[in-house]
Image 1 (cartoon, helix red, strand yellow):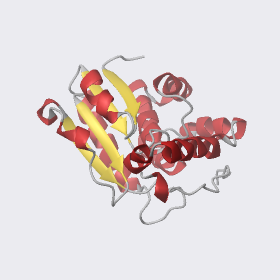
Image 2 (spheres, rainbow, N blue to C red):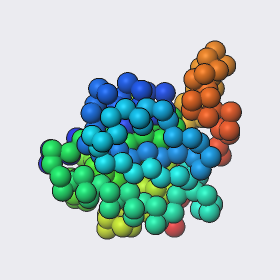
Image 3 (cartoon, rainbow, N blue to C red):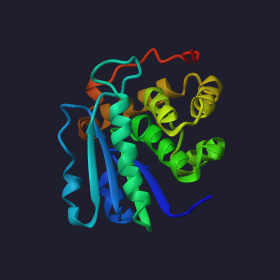
Length: 203
């Protein structure tokens, strides 16, 4: 495994601490189209190269969801991070569970090679707790990276083993938002819906 790029995954609830502690050289932020940029971006912005993407956490092929062109842009940015060692890449979305973990999975596969896709998926669990990578992002990345379906195979096996994990994760954040409205506003919890994201069989 190569070690030229160190990754960290976070969310809007952790970013205030993540940026000063991790000190990334590169940052990928994934936000809903209407979500303002987090104030944490003002922390030493000259110290890093940054890419802010805007699309919803959708897997249904919606226009406002992740497109292949979005994933291509993020992978090109990851290439820049890989070409400038020692790179430290911080990836965040809203909750740090779906869009960011899918992008981190793509970064790991690019870093370590498609022959080590299963190892890359295992590495994702050392970066973050109980991820639920966005399947559309993974599907686009699999195609662009030439993984031959291997990224989807790893993801779908995980989803079959943990079919209720995403719903539980969303409920947890909603409960925290009830107790702490500021927390809910920071993540945009009010706009979340419990998804009907059951495993879709590969076609």
